[in-house]
Length: 60
View 1: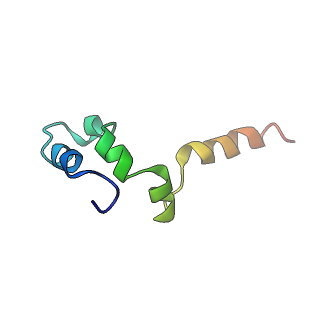
View 2: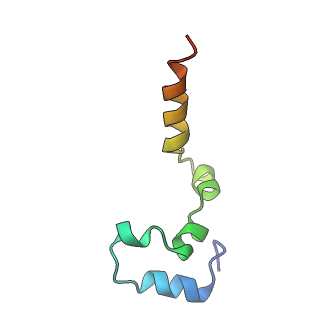
View 3: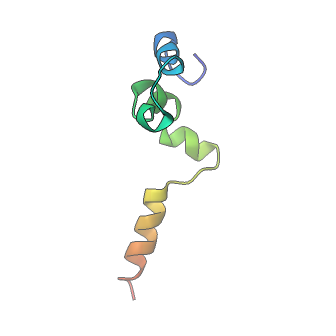
């Protein structure tokens, strides 16, 4: 399918009765909404930003 997710995974994610928090770790979501895809959409990684801020205090 469009973001590299198979039809079976897309259907299982779409029909899941889990909340968004619990379904965020499913393979279909992780394949379709990878970190690379989100970066191309303009989102930034909170972990990378935290590392920049945290380790900046040790450089001075």
